[in-house]
Length: 488
Image (cartoon, helix red, strand yellow):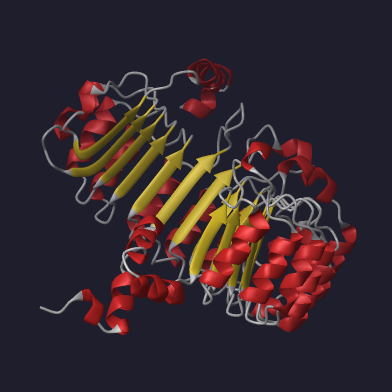
């Protein structure tokens, strides 16, 4: 019998690589000195935060113990002063000095890190990914020092970096032409118009996530200079595979409207509360994005549109039919309406939704506040040969009659229902003991009980919180009483 001490190093490394849990890795490394040394050499990922105390000294010790670190995550989510001091600028100097192979760094809720600390990382020549989440003392100057020093930067995520306003770093990124993944969320100083500064980098960009802080959207609405720059510059964005736009202004000549019909290799698109998106935008996207596999659209409330635009335009079935006709690889569809006090009363009809199901191999369908989807739609899904996952949230036209049809769906395996008023335990009876569903999740449906859905799937999850009902009933009253034509 071969003892563990005689195993080749390569085999031990292979064993260690199969152990993902950090606690288990630490336990094994303590069994003998050889394992301890080998684990130290192999460990390339470190995730630390509130447990660092004193922070700078502890991080120094860890970096010297694991000399081959390539990925470091530092997060202070849930931090309180009684947990000790947070990591400060000298800690980032430790990283730059003791981690020569560092390629991926994430800083979350590091509220004491400043531009001075970030500038220390400019010497990390191998750094290719930087993710900052709520680092309020970081400004554009700190980002600029990283961009200038780290010539191989391919991933940059900025989330709630409230003081990043100097956009010189965007122009510098544009000249480098290395960036492939850009995520900017709720950074008040960065509007849609700023993205035109990326210039030549648009050619290489594969993933773009851009979210505007809705509370500050009004200040960005009439950025005339940015509009002019977008109109004068031809944006080459053919390489984008994933596009996510949230709370953005999508209207003629205003920045991001210029790219929707140019993403020829787009596979995944998410448009959430994008004011001013028109049918022609989605139709242009569909005609040029033949590889589209996932589309998610959340439509703003009818009552919010006039506040932002003089002539609000609504997406209609023409958009969905264009996607159905051109995107023959589409597998995932999510359609939802604003979760504001007043839902949209008309937009996508049942015909438009069913056109996607009939013409595309949709495996996952998610509908939220889509009042046009009713029992007739549930019956039409019986012919959806590829549908595996169905999620219905606040779809109040669905009743037990429609729910009973689920037993006839050819490949349905996962069902999620949330806040659906019209379904009861009776609708689940055909599923009880049938073995059809793998997963059933029922949340906050007032007429459904835990006992009523037992054995309806191999895994059943049930939650009940009815505090939402009073406001919903008022909205339904508005829909059916104040707008009777729309409800028929």
